Length: 469
Image (tube, rainbow, N blue to C red; front, top):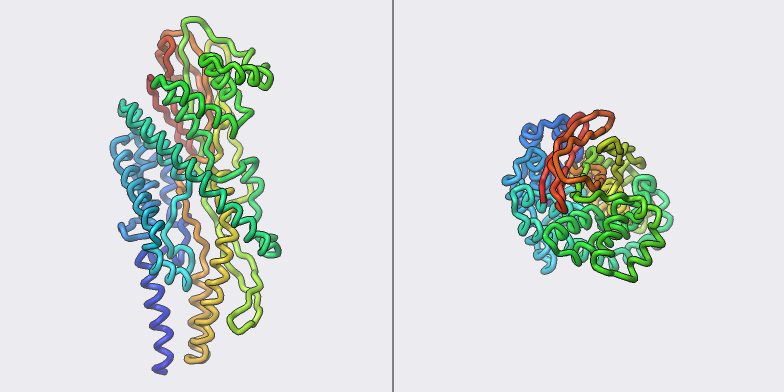
């Protein structure tokens, strides 16, 4: 019986060492379950309570960076822009530290040991590119609402660097994923489908909203060439968005981009010729956040795996997935002087998240295979040394610890819409119809200036902020 204690001690020490980089609860309960009360409070607009019920994390916890993002987002919704700015900055600094550590191949040894005998929740959460771009987008708005345009521009440049880095990094990783997918072609048929959720997005990191916000801020700062470049980038992602078409058309003419003007006139003639711009006018720019991004869920697939003894068996492994559907959001209607305008989508974060997750499947399955083989080897050793009791204990542990990694930034909006309206200078009352509810917003329009109205429509909660450029 003494020999039986050795593998048990090895199991406990290895797993607990791995848990030093994560919360022990993460190994046996999903992140989505832990964040359930937070998201309920968020839908009710009770942001202070939502912040208080975020699961606590120590700085050594592998999910601490994600907790910072959740808190900063809720601070932002609660209009505590100063605190949101501080917390987003902490998250950014932590990301920088983790990326530097990854480059010199440090910080991964212990947590991977724990993960090989538990699940991916024992690893550090690496914030994906689309979440990083949203971090900098919200941070830019934090600065903007505190009347610091230069600080907002710094964050926008960081957001653009994130997307550039993602584009370069994914050239190699996507090719590697495709090759891995070919090798696992039979297995890939079992992957949970998310095609409806993914929709038409080409990758999981290019965010048209970030480009649009960047262009808007550059334009307000008088940096028209930079604004034009980012409007065009947003248009490449959402070519049918009429507001992007008009923005590009206006700036192409203003900057005397002759070739572009000719091209855009052919592509968007119906759209750009229909726009009527009053004399002595300014603009209202509306950004609408809709809903909350859906959480990841757990799905099981059966894989044929050869153990070290060349013994082929089928094992059930857990993978994260998103429900294969998209929530439908009605366009926000804005009535201005008996004329009605409709918002249009600029990014579906749910689709970016699903595409990013799908691209990770081959790598996740590779880790799962290594994990299953290691767990099976441990079970066989415990069975030999502990008989039926050892076999039962190891089997129970293997089953209970087989959990998918469902971590993601869960307080993000599901979809973001935009709307841009030229309006004569002066005082106006705009009538907004948001999900069937009418709300009047008074705005002062200044000639040749922009007024930004940002609306959050989350569950039963609706609110807006106004900023004048």
